[in-house]
Structure formats: C-alpha cells, structure tokens
Length: 302
Image (cartoon, rainbow, N blue to C red):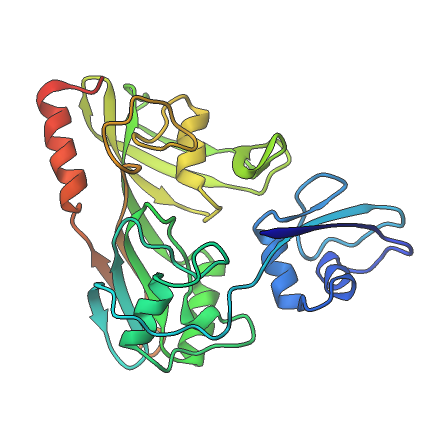
C-alpha cells in the first residue's frame, strides 16, 4: 500500500527534500531523498533532484509506500555466501527472494536471511540494516552488505561516485545490433502506470553499456555493465530498444518459456571499505538460466 499526497510550495527557494520532509509526518529528510531518487516524488509532474530549489506555486506529488516494520526477525533461509569478514558480506541472491520486507511480504526476505547470519547488522539513520544496493525479486546474483556503520558509509560513497563495477548477463529477444553499444536514455516512473518505470525524456540520467556474447537464432546473450543504477534500468533500456529481457513479464512479451526474467548479476567489484584494496567477485549462471540457455542454443527461441 502507498499514500498519495499533493501540496504546493508557498514561498519557494527551499530544497525539495527539505520541503517534503517538512510536509510529510514521519518522513525524514534521508527518506525524502530516497523517495525522490526512486521517482516516488515528482515536481510539477516530472522527476527532480533532492537538491532542486522550489519556486512558489510549484506542485509536489508524493506516493509514499509504507515503511517495512523495524521489528525484522531472523529467519533460516538458504543463502549463498561468496565472501564474508568483519566488515562486509557478499551474498549470491537466488531468484524469487525479495530484498526488503514490505506490507505485502513482511518476512521470508533477504533481510530476514541476513539477520540470521549477521544479527548485528547496522540499522537506523536510513542505513536499511546494511543493505547497500538491491536486486529485483526475480534477478539473481551478487550483492554486498555492510556489517558495520563505517563500512556502510564507505560503500554508499563508492556507489554514489559510481565506483562499483557491476556486470550482468541477460538474454534479450531479437538479434540486437550493434554488437557493442551504450544506451543513454533517462528513466522515470511511467506516467501511464506508476507501478512501472519507463524511458522518459525528462527522466533521471541512466547509462547502460553492453556487448553481445552470442547470438542464438532469435535472441542474444549480452554482457551488461551499469554506469548508473536506476530502478529496473536494464529491463527498461532493452525493452525500449524492442529487445526486452526474455521472461520479463512486466516489460517484455510472451510466450514465456522460463519462470522469471533471464537476468543475473554475475560480477561485483569495489574497494574494500577497510583495506581500500579492490576486490571482485563472480557468480556463475544458476541452473535454471544455464539450462534454458542450452535449450535456446540448440533449437532457438519461439
């Protein structure tokens, strides 16, 4: 569930994030910035930055989802661990696992599994229990989680500076050309359907690099490198080129012969928050994707 609020700026000059925090009870400035970054808050119907200075009479619309309960409980859920030390844990998230509890799914999430492994994950002040970045429910692969406040601050800084190196493997429909390119199209919430994202001219900057690994009849296996990290970025960008990710029921097209979108976070690199040394982790395609790829390579995709 979410609550929709509309209000107008009376005097202007105030930053958008500060104005939103002052107008919405229980919404901190940190959460206001996050909502703006996620596209849940618009200014005169368009995406904006948290630092945008308001003008008198501008209309602010906010769709505020309920915050997950702070009483998250540890649960024993199978979870692959690629690496762990006193500062960080790198997990290999399986498909089908939601990252954060929501009103619709209050437990059985990645966070519940993490709290079983690491009961003392940092929380409060917008730290979201150490979770630095997210993957969609039906996207598998690597994520890094901070185990201390200092590690969280460091990793968030790297993420904002675009120092993370994230590589995905995706199977997209069609024979995509050229074989190597950069997609630069702004992304924001779809004006026609607020539950989806879309390429929007005034959307937030979104940059996706890709190269074709192999063509298989009527689909292409691509290696994707994210420069920015917008919600559903890979799925939206390839759908905008008429090459949607295979199995994507939100942005793609049928028939769907695979239970989820063919998208896997295969490589994750960053500087260790304590040592400063660059570290990189890799994850093989899970069995459902590798088996499907073998089938496609043998007979092509309908």
